[in-house]
Amino acid sequence: MKQYKYFKRGVKVPHYKNTENVETTVMPIPDLVEIPMLHHIGAPCEPLVKPGDEVLVGQKIGDSDKYISAPVHTGVSGKVKKINSILFPNGVTVKSVLIETDKKQVVDQSIKPPVINSKKEFIAAVRESGLVGLGGAGFPTHVKLNPPEGIKIEYLLINGAECEPYITSDYRESIENSWNVISGINIIMEYLEIDKVIIGIEDNKPKAVEVLTGIAKTSDKIDIMPLKSKYPQGAEKMLIYSLTGKVVPAGKLPLDVGVIVMNVTSVAFIASYIKTGMPLTKKRITIDGGAIKHPSNIEVFVGTNIKEAIKFAGGFKEEPKKILMGGPMMGVSQYNLESPILKQNNAILAFNEKQSKMPEQTACIKCGRCISACPMNLMPVYFDIFNESKDADQLLKLDILSCIECGSCSFVCPANRYLVQSIRNGKLLVRAKGSK
Ligand code: SF4
Ligand code: SF4
Image (cartoon, rainbow, N blue to C red; front, side, top):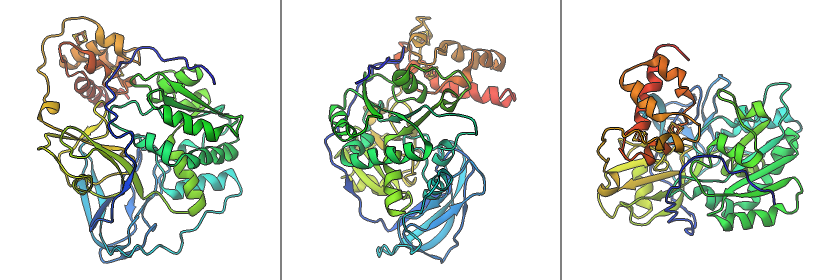
């Protein structure tokens, strides 16, 4: 087993992996699903169906002719009730397809395993599957797997770090669907002609390390590396450094250093799609937080709303004061329990009053802890200062756009400065000035 390098800085966060031993349960088909036309970074899709249309399981209901995009499918059969629009928490409005389910689950006859004889056909199949990065980023996978001509990929890295507190959906994937994880890796290695694969898993998940090591031992090309549990170990640049020692320069992509990083659930999905031809329409999510009665892992159809998913998991034990899609460090607050679950969502956290209370900000004491914690070697305290003075030039000079919004700086700040919020505002100032 190789030795990891252990990226510098970052923070120790409590794990709260309350659901690590909770097997995934499958949620029954809801009466309604609302499937947005945007689950990914890139161009939104346009609906391919209209109100009154009957839809079948696996049917494509949205697509785009833009390269950075991914088609959208339905996992339920039923009738299209309405083409709606949804306001995402980031302020973007997106079209959605509201489907009344018939609970018959009639499968679209076009669903069959794709015929693949070349890399080109493999990439086309991945696009048709609707796969986007399932670790949360939502980058269309067919784009990631298709580097520009002349770029040689040395490593395929599999991200099973899952460093955010509470979330265990990838961990359950590694255990419950381990053969598909390894099978998906083998498929990608074959079509992309990659010889070296490393699966990175934090050392607080020994069972996942054990199970995947047992299966991968048949291959001399796949290494499993337990990584020290440290946040944000699962961030792309940190993972690349920890597993290979390579540094991705500011403004560059993993491809530029010969690396592709994929989430563990994404590679398992590729194996399943190649076998069945069923596109991405379901997702495992962790439901947890102080307001949740029974912390669980559940499998839902994409488009199921938060309220129904929480109800299936046993409901609330006390009034929730904050609902997050994702983990407590990088998750996005939801303003509405009717919001649908997207392909790339991996957790819903419902926090009670005590957990949701925002500590009061006090004046910065210039302790420098935010700088020591920043895994990107940035100076968050100055982002805060120059955001307040609205100095976009200084913010750009200090490389604010390299911030990955991991929240490590806010986490350690003894003055409770709202640093991530300042950074987000600061980035808007820089972009508004047209600097990037
Ligand atoms: S400045 Fe950005 S990258 Fe650095 S710790 Fe803060 S949020 Fe993370
Ligand atoms: S950690 Fe907080 S108090 Fe310390 S320098 Fe950074 S912003 Fe100021």
